[in-house]
Length: 347
Image (cartoon, rainbow, N blue to C red; front, side, top):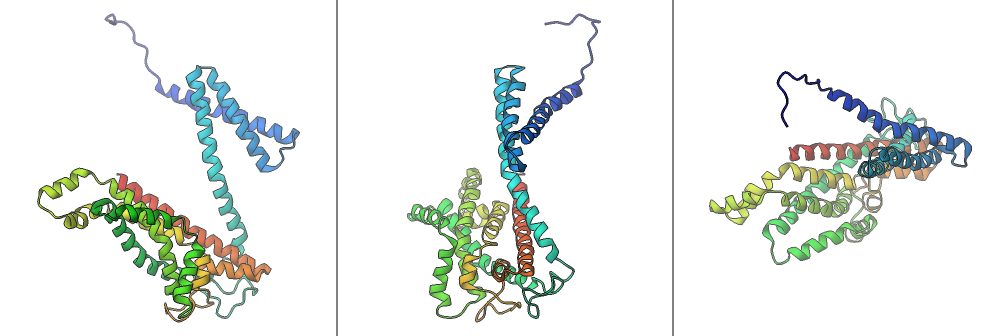
C-alpha cells in the first residue's frame, strides 16, 4: 500500500494506549472492591477473610465481563490474569500477616540492649527492659557456621559426582539425596542424640551435625540443577584442550557456576536456620553464650523462642515473640540475599 506524496500523517500518541491499558486493568479491581464491600455488609461474609473471598469471586467475574467487551481471546486472557493475580496475593498475604503479627507481638521486647545482653542474670518473667538474645544470636551463627563447613562441601561434591563424574553409583546417590529431603527434622535430631549426645553431652557440635544432615539434600539438589545449566560447550572445549575430567570439574565447571553454588548454599542455610526439634535433642539451651562447641549446651534462636514459650508468662511470651521476629527476619534476609546472588548469576 502506497501513501500519496504530501498526504497528511496523523501523529501517533502511544501514551494514550498506556493510559487506556491502566484504566482497563484497574476497572475490574475497583468494581470488585465495591461489590466485595457491599457483600461484606449485607451477607454473612464478615471480617477480612470474608471480604477477601468475596473480592476473589467478584474480581474473576468482572475480569471476564470486561474481557468479553473485546473478544473471546481477550476475555480468556483477562480471566487467566485475574487468577494469576489472586494466586500471588493468596500466597503473599499470609506471609505479610505472619511478619506483621510477629512484629506487633514481639516489638515490646525489643529495646536498646536487646541485641547485646543475654539472659545470664535475667529471668524469663523479668521486666522487658532487661536481658536480651545476644547469646542466642551468636550461638545460632556458630552452629550454622559449623554445619555449613560440613554440609556445603559435601553437597557440592555430591552434585558434581551426579552431574559431572556420572559414576556407576550416581543414580543411587541421586535417589538417596531425594530420600533425605523427606526426612523429618526430629529424626535427624534423634539420630545425632543416639550416636553423639548419649555418649557425650549436649553441645554445639551435635546441633551442627543434625543441621548438616538436613542441609545436605537441599544444597546437593540445588547445586545439581545449577551445574546442569553450565553450557556443554565449556566441557567440550576443556576436554579438547587435553584437560582431565577432574581438572575440568574443579577448575572449569565449578568456578563457572560459583554464584549459583553460593545461592544453593544460602538456601541450605535458610532451610535449617529455624529448626527447633533437632536442636532440642542435640545442643539444647543455655542462658549465656559459650564459645565451647563441645561439652556443654549452646543457645540458639529457635531454642530461645521455645524456652520462653514453655515458661508461658506474659513477659516470657513477649520475649518469645521478639525472638521469633528476629529469627524470621534472619531467614528472610538469607532468602533475599540468595535471590540477589541468583539474579546476578542469570545476568
